[in-house]
Length: 282
Image (cartoon, rainbow, N blue to C red; front, side):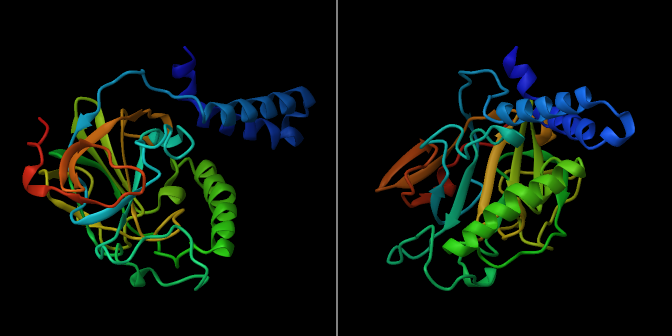
């Protein structure tokens, strides 16, 4: 029961905000306190999973090609991003690291901010992990400068958690200003794939398009609540993230000379194994 209730966490918060900020209209302090309780309850439900436990990972193709570093991976913790909100229980962030001689660091001392074009991930192609149908595609939000210095990260937290999240709530846009430009694919069997922080103007598909596994959907960008150019990818069980639960996934990759099928983690660079990837889902 609590998992079903958790799917409506955003609705609780919106209703609570409506009750709290409309006291001048309804004139009831009790309703305002009820609104506050709904908001607190909704925030608590961000940490409650909405899906059924024990589901086997869904094997797909890698959404990127080349050498990448897995960050905030479900191989390290679940929920991987600290919350079940927007169906991202098993989400992963992928940072392009093409040169083995250059190690990747999450934070920099200098510069405080850099243009997205200076990062190797920016402009990398994003690929469909299976056959599917586009249910949502947007690409108008700008790609901002990096926020991977400590001052930049603090700004990211304030802007992302406060302003972007609040704006997404108020516009009922299911986290649009948090995920930035994005594409959502219907892979069939109640499985939907999300690709976030896509580069502005790079989306090559539109709602209703049918795509094949390996088709290019767009390019990696730095839109939305993002510290540096990277791809945020996850699977969920509904087309709209606002009421979706995350689904576990796996894809083939190579690490240390060994080919595996699973989810890379530990911030250990891996290489995608395109030629060995599974057939498209039906």
